[in-house]
Image 1 (spheres, helix red, strand yellow):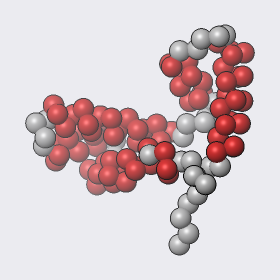
Image 2 (tube, one colour):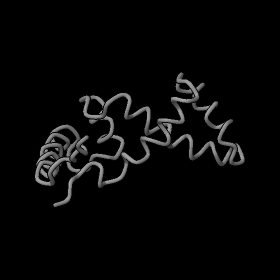
Image 3 (cartoon, helix red, strand yellow):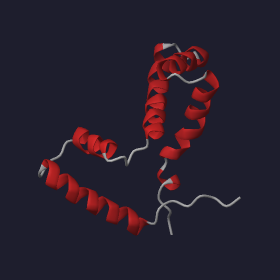
Image 4 (tube, one colour):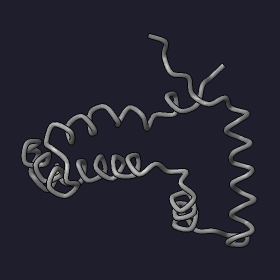
Length: 109
């Protein structure tokens, strides 16, 4: 099976420029991080599952400390909060964490 390729750098830069123009029209010179993220979510550029998965990974890291390193309890907490099974929570944390690396989103020549 062929490995999925990331976006070409020129496409990424064009996207950034287009987004920058949209944000300037909507928020002026200095949009906040919350403005940018809210805009991306509203426009559907952030998939619902990706948003949920990102938050699950962030909550996992935070809750793992709170639960004294107990992964089982942490996964149970996530499954309750996000209404998924424990095994789904585990798959999301272990498999989606890799997707946050630049190399899996932008191809390098």
